[in-house]
Image 1: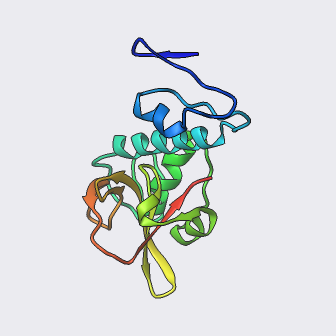
Image 2 (image 1 turned 30 degrees about the vertical axis):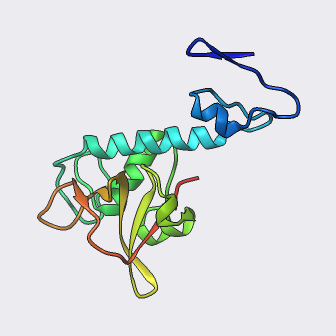
Image 3 (image 1 turned 180 degrees about the vertical axis):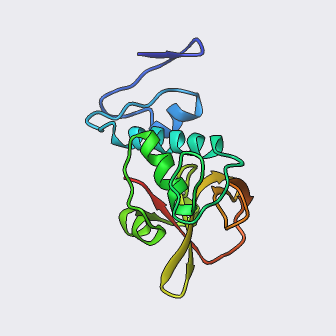
Length: 158
């Protein structure tokens, strides 16, 4: 028996109480046999997002990968490295390495890739509410900015 908010929730072998009902009343769902990989990926992405945000105001420098100056892929590489995951150096190589997700399935910490033709020219880290943390261009700094193009793809670091 699971007790949540002083309301007992009984689970039977036949699954009389659905997972959706349990979630609706605020219960906790444990899936037997499920690995911690999904939750580990979420933790890594959340940490990478925090690292990127902590670099707010750091100057852009082409080819720089931190800790004080960054280009776009240098910021994503640095942020995920600090979170415990390695990424390749360029935006295109990072795109090739990630698991692609639709805009509807994007989550905070996913990478946002800006495309022109068949190639990727820019990358940032999705922060929610259609915004990214990124290192935009020469003369600019790491900042939070609204996604300005519809020609983007999303990738989840695995």
